[in-house]
Length: 347
Image 1 (spheres, helix red, strand yellow):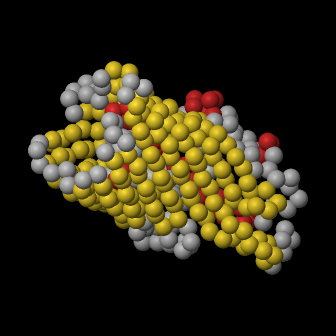
Image 2 (cartoon, helix red, strand yellow):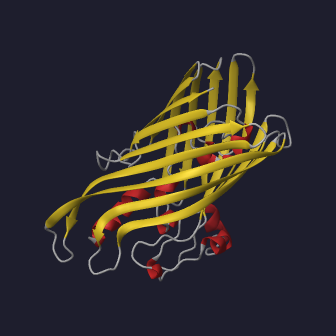
Image 3 (tube, helix red, strand yellow):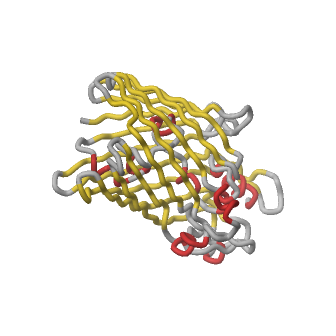
């Protein structure tokens, strides 16, 4: 049974192939929602101008003046299994004089697993595995061009609903976390935006007992975007983003609490190695007459050896927007041919 739980954790962590990111629990929180952002190589923290700001940067909610609902679906890691899927739903609502509020639900279905005895490979039953998070977000303006945002979330991990051998616990656990974001438009020059988001800060998650608790995937995103062209019919935006997991885990299996790891995660190895752990994302988005969008991007993770190009498209009509993204990875890569579909409705 322990081997089964380990396999599930590997499957969830595959999108974040870096060794450091395998050191945290519930890495599904790092799966990027929104086909629009995914098509731009996941470089969206400094844009965050739609409902998915509840994930990318809650500060972006403050600049939005209309309600919007966004839904996304993706068949996940099709190279490994046919019954895995990832869903994301979010709703935002601005309230004049108060700011903009949002809620979001993230759900990762891990399919049906076979239960085996602790001392035998013979199957003795089946169980369903899944993980989800429910978040509430808020963004408010500090000035005309700057804003801050906060998200709080409840996390549920249900890897197995049966006991793990002789251990006291099983494969189920709950956790709480929060995100903090900042977004600055007209940063130094017109057309340039700066965004930063610190996510998944909270107590460790406990599956079996407190001595074996695992840290949440606390993650830092820093990015810039620039409006290269903005006329009546054509709009082009460039974006770049840098991400780093802020987790400090030791060889004996223990780890620092999140507030300490904000510092120690930068000092556990030499400077060059720490810089190699930073994931780079770059993206570009082109809109024609606010009707049709084309997107592309690139994701580069040196330590995890994850390198792939992304492509996307969007179609907007009235209050509806449909977005699609595609990952072009090396043959045999678990993320190869991954597609995301999003539908947004807002006015």
